Length: 529
Picture 1: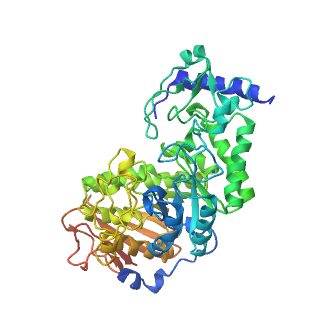
Picture 2 (picture 1 turned 90 degrees about the vertical axis):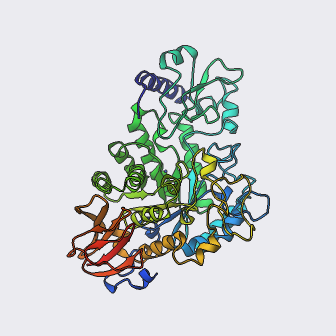
Picture 3 (picture 1 turned 135 degrees about the horizontal axis):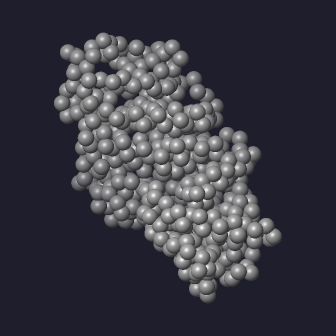
């Protein structure tokens, strides 16, 4: 990320001054598993994060129970059996709080549910039902900023003497002129204009993402205490299991990255007081050396590097560099925090859908799943990925309705007219369930295999370098047990070392055996050694 040095320095000065002012006032394949590759020994409350799959849901698009065209919590509750049957062990809900926007990343009230989604009682019932199915619940918590319609901000704009003034970051025009009003576009923010006018105010307020999302001021002790209260409410009163923390890098500006890390350490400590086994996974778009210290405060960080390199490898049919950075990063993370978790994924709600990135090629889509679900880490799957859903930005188009049936539109949301995912472009779930070769069954088989295989869940990785750059090969190792995983990213068969291929095949993605030292096109094999 490029930095505006003058801005960052002066922003620090502003923050320090604000702080002084304030001081006074976180299946064949399954059946063929050998006894050597036995089910995971991982038990207890932490099992889901250690190699288990988390299913990301945009409630608005998932299932509509009251027939108003918008997905809701009652609908999601009705579909918990589907998510559990797929093999997921946790659900991550994109924001559900009252908000003026469809995506709800600008929160008006942290203690309530958006009326389109239901009520707080609906949410409590959802959590109870999820837990009965051994599904953990991770809630998207947006605490870098609020909505400009949040009551805190409505008070803040009333003037310098208001008790909520310093809940946000304000600066006079002379200071802003020195600081600079713009920033570079970054991976997580395409906003350029940082300072925003408020009616009746000579000063302007700071908003990293957008004028409708004013940043909170974490130099204010009361802000910190209020955010602790919010987290503890959802963990104790509602009994959720953890948070996905939006914009985790941006609590303070880039030159105060150490302060941001310290905030997350403090937040983690407070949340663990409320729920010792809480899980905190953060969004930090940056390189590994910047990410690593955050693992002292957050249990896991989303691995964007893997997402991007996986896409490029599949597009170019070149596996030669795919895992180098992944393994180097994991080593760095382990040195920083031995008990870290790596949140791996193909794409999420902020990116073009993986199958659209792969030009709709289902074989490559299956390969993406095969690679993701055989790597070490905690895989996150974006809703509809298992159907091969398509979508290209703007964001609404990568969050289209889940297509449950080709014949019956019961529950299919209608808040947006789908462009990429219709009966003519995508096989609905009911069709795919009945097709053993579908991408849905491919995902389900792999998830179930991973769920019941301790090496795939918990094992380390050792890369094997084949002669062909189109072949990706690695061992997963746990104690004295290991399995070999081979993927052919190419559209033609590839030669391979016959000695390495010896062993019992416990999973394969094509109805062929390995013969004549070749790996069939666009295929994956897991071999017990």
